[in-house]
Length: 295
Image 1 (cartoon, rainbow, N blue to C red):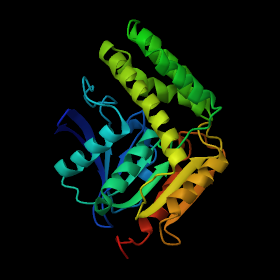
Image 2: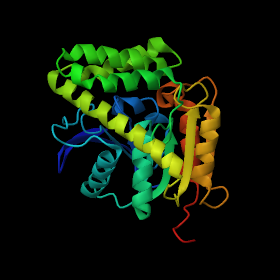
Image 3: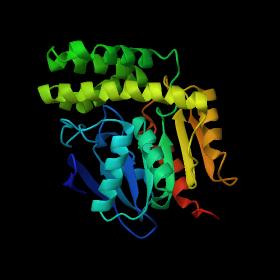
Image 4: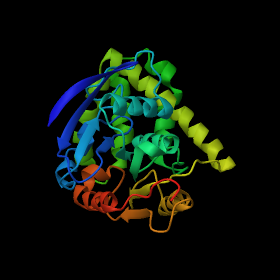
């Protein structure tokens, strides 16, 4: 694997390549808010051979540049993903996103269907609604409403608050705590504090927007094969919500184009908690025949 920094319009994105070519279009893995490319470490060896896999750190996360004045919304992250594909010479790819990353790849698939051959939504959060009574949801919402205070405190305070909120999304919290120590390290600086505040505000705005979209039931169709995989113990997504999301995702596709899977014993971070099962599901997704637009 080799890593490099890719210059985009509003900052440098860290990206590395894994796997080999031959079996089909490249696969791009997109993590969610307050994690990084480290999320995929156990899944990568379990992906099928013959695929070039690109793994990135979203702006403000991992090794990528802080956003400074750049937007941190799903739309802005999605635009940067398409720009990254342009720079890397990727005409078409299978996109797999986790958490907020699922909303990012979904938006790219909706706006640029010719560039996406398959899509994997892992433990999706937005634009799908979270469980209204979720403890994690409530805690992140409260953190976002206190951004005006966090900005004046030491970075460690917000990083610790994020750690306490997010660790509840792990089935095994001791393992989750170790991972979060890695993910949140970048936010324990003054620049990282500003990044975390910007991402929290963007998340709150996305949640409000997703509620309005849910009421209007306005959603662009997906024309490619799709997988929705979630943990049965995910505090951000109930079984009924996952089934409804899957139904909405599949309504414009041919029979057999979409698959929905709930993984027993898994919470929100499926790439870490169930890499074997998730790898098998992604193998099935990548093995599907393409459904060209208009066929």
